Length: 430
Image (cartoon, rainbow, N blue to C red; front, side, top):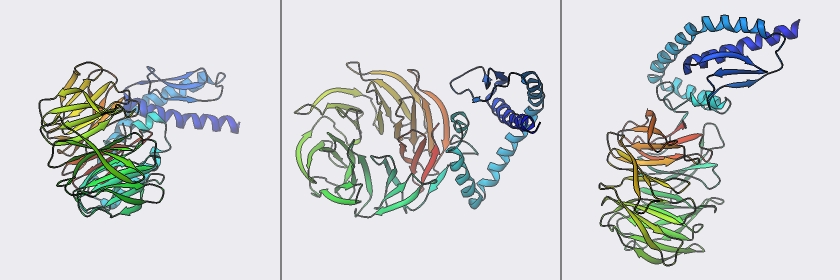
């Protein structure tokens, strides 16, 4: 009857989709198990589609699916060739690229996790889901707003741009031009709706996300000589850490009602502190220096004290702290390393030669399973952290002249990159 015919037709289309994915995954399609369609061998990423009870028609459907399986491998091969050819066409046509990017972005929001994982940044030759234009110079820093609804980008054009992530693709929400020189650092406070920006104009501003207003927090050019290099905060934004381009010390400022008072100075490093990171509970501050060391500071204590140090041996360009607090990942001149900071002293667990130039950006997923690295070679690399070793999974040619910043959406689904090409790009995080 009509209903049975419609059911069989729908099953055939579902089977086509499963067979195509199976061919791309190198796995075989089993068919019906109980009232489900599955791919085997079962893995965390196996496609499973709930269906109605097909017990009576199972034999006939198995025969149809078997016939489809034998003929579909050739079609899958042709599809792959078509994708490769499409990538070449898109590479030479900006308008088509923009249209396909929009379609990819809409598709990524609707498909299952397994299919979405196929929309990796390398899909269609590295075309991002979206390309956010507006900055006139290098995009130096990125951050996600406390609510997760906005992306914040800072650049050498002196501007901070706030992008609305509730739109697909993201759209510009605000342009903030309160800084007089390059924006060099952004840091979002935990659990409060404020964030900080630092600049070569030797000022630190604190921003209120609700009314988009800034308060000049630190304006003493002598205190922040030659501009801000890195920022971090703790205690719900009431404690601010600042490093500068000239001095190797870490400045500690108390923030009360929009007013900053210098509290103390942390001394340990002999070279500029390029990067800072906080543990997820805001109790430990990690400071990475040009001198090849990382200081570990107990900032929940009064007074703040250094509890450990990591001797990397070469200039530290980037770092990321696991959300569990047991690992620190360090980027240097092309080398990526993992350290167990539960040991005293911290123990190097893994080290790999990753990029062809300095690794200047690292970001880790909320579940601590994935790490992303960005470097001056223009590439973004994805790393599987499920084992103690650093397992490389993907490489994306992201920015022609170099990657400068990375950020992940709060749900770990989208990866954002900023580069020397003045662009912010949006990728499927995989």
